[in-house]
Amino acid sequence: GACLLTGTYTTSMRLTADKPWLLRSGVIIGNDTDETILEIEAGTTIYGESATSALLIISRGSEIWAEGTAAAPIVFTSDQLDGSRARGDWGGLVINGLAPINACTDGTTPCEAEGEGNTGAYGGEDWADTSGSLKYVVIEFAGTEVSPDNEVNALGLQGVGSGTSPDYIQLHQTLDDCIEFWGGAATAKHILCTSPGDDGIDFDLGFQGKMQFAIVQQSGGTGNNGMEADNNPDVHTATPGTTPTVANVTFIGDPAVAESNYAMLMRRGFGPVMSSVAMDGFSSGCL
Image (cartoon, rainbow, N blue to C red; front, side):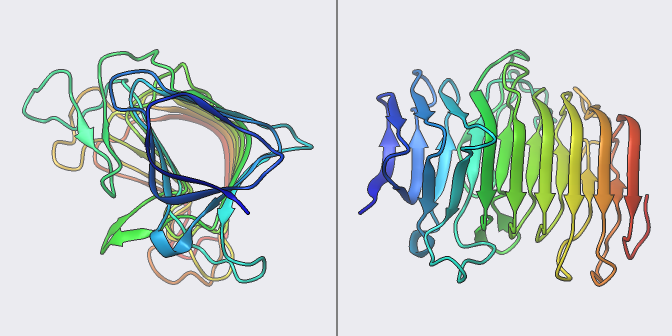
């Protein structure tokens, strides 16, 4: 009884809360050139089809406007029966923007890259680029493994500019990271990452945005690091640098996670400004 979404859409549309919606395989909004707007009404539920590793991708130049409320959040979840859902049932939400990244160590300008899991091109020259708005959104049981060591995060912000500010977002029971920033300058607030399968928060490739009011809580003996952060993995001094401003974050570890499990793993030229950060319970240590 759900309305099916599949393939590429280049005409703007609105998903309403009066019916369920099903994502089948890769659902792409926009053609990487022309603007296509996806609007999602408060209280809407969108299911990701497990059999096809469903994934929602917002292309560069297009926008997603998903603004729920505290009483009526927008929920992205697995199509499996309630009680049988598991991390990695479906892909997740990927947003590609036109903000700068530092993936091009050969000096190519503007720098572009292809997202993990073949999720489209991202990167450009507009720090203030907007990809829409996310507020009061839940993304759960996401993070499909496309191929070995090539997984999709619950929420991937790839070259997303400062015109987009995810706010009041919960990422729950993902197979890979809860939220990963690949360059760009988005501002994220009120981020709740519960029971991640890998890292809670990940910064990469020249991210210069901000994050405030966030919690990462591991559980069930799963997870890797509360936060993992890099500049460019090959050229650690690549510009623009990964230099976010981060404040008011709590990392709650699960000592049962045996593998490398730090509250904050900073490496490869990462240079943040951080304040008011609390952490405890990580088997490998805090920092």
